[in-house]
Length: 132
Image (cartoon, rainbow, N blue to C red; front, side, top):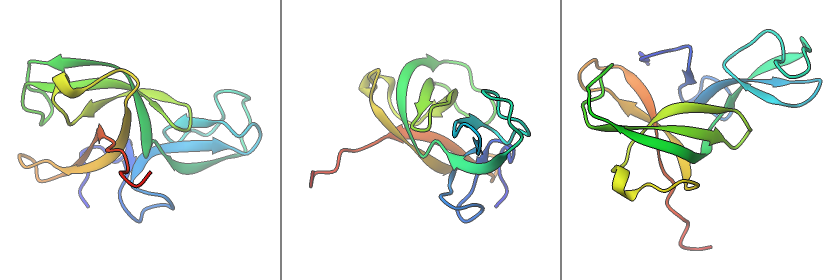
């Protein structure tokens, strides 16, 4: 898979639990951090392992962008998300801004970028399970 930014996310099958954001889990304190880092940013332990995080997240803030950038045709939505593992980051959101609400659940999704032919990612609203 040719990714838009291989440093930010894992594709399916690259690590257990993928696809999702690249992260690190500390063996000392158990906290997760975004990206693959050599030292835990919380306790400074070097006992860290790469993990897939951010498969599920909560939308904390969002805004519509009206200027095309990096393969995204305007208008598009960018949002601040809180991953289920704890780290927070900004990510593209594939939804109409009128349908979004703070606190709504999101899920990680791989997307094909038609212009570049590369695979990227975005978050999409998580549809509630009708069965409960």
